[in-house]
Length: 450
Ligand code: FEO
Image (cartoon, rainbow, N blue to C red; front, side):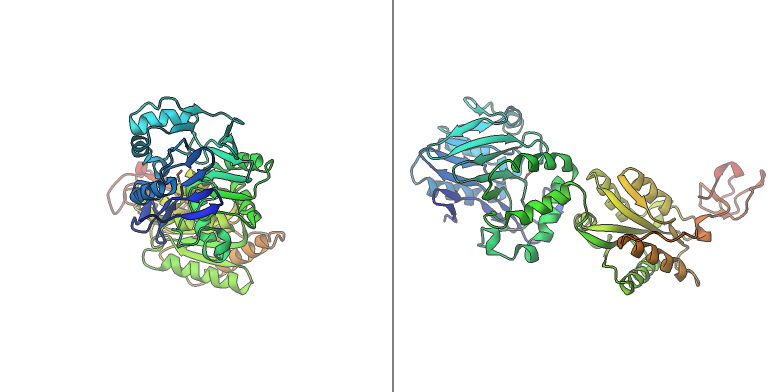
C-alpha cells in the first residue's frame, strides 16, 4: 500500500522510513530510524527527484506507481549518487526505461561504477543549467563534497523550492510529520540534525559554506532535503545552525568533558572538575566515551566551546575509545576550540602526550593548561590542580584574562622510563650501567619522561 504526503499542489513526498536498521552507513546508530526522501513532481512532465535506499525500496516503488497513476515518468533528477539514495536507480530504470536521467558527468561515472550500466541519453547539467518541465523551471548548482563530489542541488524558481540533497538532512524517521513546523524541531530533532551534519558532512565545512553562499542569492521558501523533515517555515533556524557548524564555531559557551576510565580514577577526577565548573556557573556536560557512541560525542564537541579530554594510558598508548574519538575529530576537520587534558597512568603516564599529538593535527586548538596528571587516582592534595583548571576554564569561557598559570609538579616528571616494560627510574640522571630491575634491559632501552 502506498504511503505518500503532499508537499505542494503538484509535488509529492514518495520516500520511505527505515526503523529496522540499527546503524546508518554501517557506522552511525540510528535508534530513531532514518528517512529516505524522494519527491515526484506532476507537472506537464513528470519528474522524480532521487530514488531511495534498498531498505525502503518496496514502499518507494508502490508510492511511485500510485503517484504516477498511469503517467509515464519523464525525468529522473539525480542530486546524489550515494546508495542511500541511488541504490534503487538500477531497478527504477528497468521499470521506467522511458525516463531520461538528469545529472552531471560525475554522476554518470558513478552510475557506471555502481550499476554497471552506461546511461544513454542522459541530460548532463552544469552550474546554472536549467530544465523546464511545464509550469516549473529548475536551475542546477554544483555542491561538490556536500557530501560526495558529484552532488548537485536544484532550485525551482516557480515555487521557490531548494532540493538540497544531503544538506539540511537529519537522522530519524518521519513519524507521519513531513514538515519541520509540524514538530518541535529544536526540542526533538536538533540534536539528531547536529549529529547527522557533524558526522556525515562535518569534514566539509568550506564546501558547505560555498553552498550556503550560493543559496543566499536565491529566494528560498522551502527546502526539500533527502533525509528528515521538509522546511517551509523558519528556514533561518536551520540555515543559521549550518553557518555555525560549517565555520566550526561553537553553539554553547561551556565545557564538554569526554572521558575514558578503566577503574574509575579518571572518571572521579572528571566528576570533581565538573562539580567545580558547575559551582562557578559554567555550563558543563560529560560523556563516557567507552559507553556513548563516538558519533554522539563528536556532535557535542561541535556544540561546545571548551573541551577537556580525560583518558588513561593503556599499553603505553592512549586508551582505545578516546583515541577513536580524537582520530574521528581529526578526520572531521574539527578545529577552533580551547581544550585541556587530564591524563592517567599508574607507572608511565603517556596519554597526555598522545592526546596533545592528536590535538596538534587539528587546526586552531588552544591548550589552556598543562595536563593534569593522575597516577592511578587523584592523590591527596591534587584537588587544587582541578580547582585551578576549573578557574582557568571558567575565565576562558567567560572571556576573562587567564590567570597566571602554576605548573603542577607532575607536569614536569623527572626520571626515565623503560621502553620495554614501563618501569620508571626517578632521578635526573640515568647511570650508564643501569639495568631495568623488571625486564633486565640496559639503560639504552630507557628514555626521559615527558
Ligand atoms: Fe544521504 Fe551522502 O547520502
